[in-house]
Amino acid sequence: MIFGRSGTGKTTLLNLAAGLVKPTSGRVKIEDQDLSEMTDKQLSSLRSQKIGFVFQFPSLLPSLTVKENLSLPAIFAQRKEVSSRTMMLLEMVGLAGKKDVYPRQLSVGEQKRIVLARSLINEPQLILADEPTSDLDDRTEQEVMGILRDFNAKGVTFLIVSHNLQLIPFATRALQMENGQLADFDRFTQGKNIHQAA
Image (cartoon, rainbow, N blue to C red):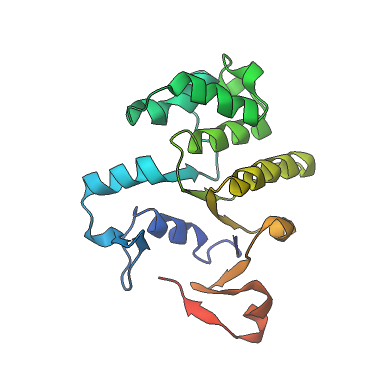
């Protein structure tokens, strides 16, 4: 988990990790694949198969039901058994009963949980999450982070960026970003173990 104030480069780091932008120096690799050397088609395939996204603001399509929103990435990826996996994920985030409603009928916390479930629909190995608990009350924040922790225990890797230091207990490793530099959280103020963010 990476912590830092607004404007320190957290979202840019996620965009680099997803291959959405290219680094001006250094390399970004996923499974020994240099993202800057991949074609747009290869990057799209990598993102659809191995990377899930949780954006800061819910990005659900208002004209689609919850189930349709959740299923969409799997349909684009031409995966099999989309309906059964969709319902399994809805049950895991506690919203199976909301499958036929529209995003406007959900609370902010429920929308966040649907976005989280959608990020997992293609069984990615890596989830990139930008402020996944912003705008949530304390109880809903704990629920969402508990879901993330459960999936992490099942083998899904999460790279989460946040400004909320109360999330530190959920992190298996905490880093801090300041002026485009990363360091272990407890050493940053001592100026030790600082690595240039690539």
